[in-house]
Image (tube, rainbow, N blue to C red):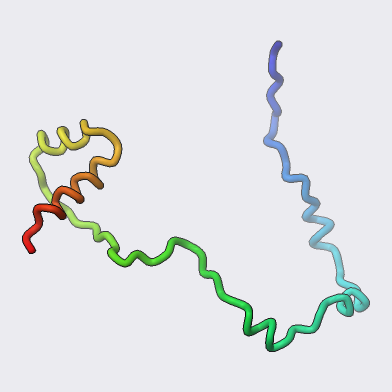
Length: 93
């Protein structure tokens, strides 16, 4: 069985032109509830993104011997995190 390929990616199926030309009629405004102080008090602003870390990481530049870097990289994914953990354990207090 051979699979046929689409010549263009599938669309989302929305009709943005129809949405853009829609005009809200006065009677549709009557369907909307009144905005109350209680509604505003319950609202919250969601800025999105990641939460702020209690211990944020800082970018630094450090020169290490190439063989040291190669050994850490050879230990597999997450080598930078493991290196940081090891440095944290031996750091002066």
